[in-house]
Image (cartoon, rainbow, N blue to C red):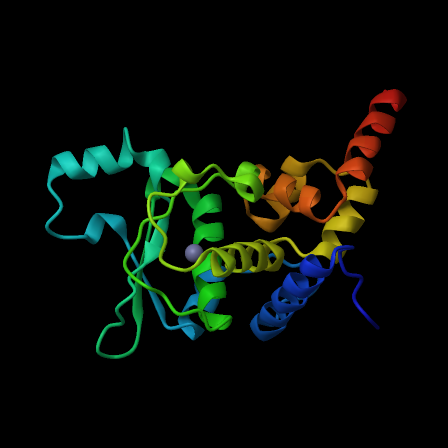
Length: 211
Ligand SMILES: [Zn+2]
């Protein structure tokens, strides 16, 4: 049976890549995907922020405090001698956002993107599509690759078919987020880019009317 796909041509392509990744990971249609398991196949070594040596306590405090919203994490562009690449995730962002950041790095690898340099990327998933330039401190991939990796990663975490079913059932974004172990913002981003927002809002209105 064919999977239903989101309406726009671009989203269809992203969804197919995401479904390929989910297939590779061996997860069923509604099952949450674990990016940490996939990271191994992408030869990405996730390093605990606290284990980074050479960071002064001032830098540490800055990165997790004042500057915590300015970076989400990233991979080193230069691989280790064994071919693996280091990934650092911002512990101040919590597990759900870390999963989306890591999934994007995994998607870059599976999509065969070539990184340019070490970079720390800032992002806000809710405004990603029309992101202001100042939200990105530096890029490690070109714009199209960044867009594709983020979109494919998000689609792998929150696949369209299950999302559409949940939305139709009137489930809230926060509830769907808990199910897929991602942030509510990521679910809302997915609902919007796959053109389910109207249906989502409609479902919440009709629920409210029943109360
Ligand atoms: Zn990226």
